[in-house]
Length: 398
Image 1 (tube, rainbow, N blue to C red):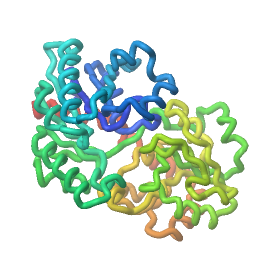
Image 2 (image 1 turned 180 degrees about the vertical axis):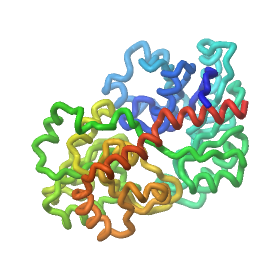
Image 3 (image 1 turned 120 degrees about the vertical axis):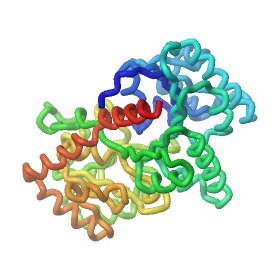
């Protein structure tokens, strides 16, 4: 069913619109806006400190935006970045929610239904936002196991996150969840939970190796075969010890790492990851999402060496997985529950030894039929399809 109705959407995000890595929030809401929905994307509130200064230095804030705290993205979304001027969160939550209400009244067409689409379950005083902002439908879109984040490292902190999530899930009209473990957890609070797994950008990455005219200069001189990884290099999920083991066991293979330490929004290097002694590991830093397919075009294979821990096992499904399949790349991963349906088109490994051996095998896996099978799966797991599925569920609930 193709949904044609247009909505007003207020998205409470837990990541900045201008954050280097495109995650669920940016993928979903940019497509919503491009389809003609009126999207008000609300960044997580930021303090007048390091994060704000870094955003200014990157050119994301001109004088007009500093005063208004809003900007219009080319896709059509209106981005509002609340700035915390007062140190008391109960006050700032009320002020920000009232500003959102005023922006919605100013920019939203009156004849469209309004969806309050919440990702940011950990936002301070989330009930204030829910009760203040007018809406026709409340959606909780759960894309992570927030209890498993490193910052929630005590029973008290975990309990606090759990209470917020229980409130939001129980109050929501619709709950979306991206991993099987998240579905099971949230169904304790709400029966209207829908499994909407992470997907990839098929159009962007499909057939890149046949379309690219020349490789990026920093990749071109790296010896082949090249195995790639792109994305966040945070230690709570990127397994640097596994990466070291695999590189040592495969000295003839070049491993190319592209990304940054995402949660801290800091640049990483091989020494910070403990990988600087390995001559066959090449770290290229962060690359804009808009040019990422050019690097995939130069990869012979792809890896996602993730830790198996409370966060990843409980609710992690890397977006990059389907991007690599779309590019036709043989993909080696660790044994996360989210990968189970895709064991026929990827190498799912349980040990470091299996991972290292799978990397070797994957380089021989260039059969045209296998490449087609990977790309067929990626075609069926694309952002456009996911967004349409979510809109159909919204329509049914309205």
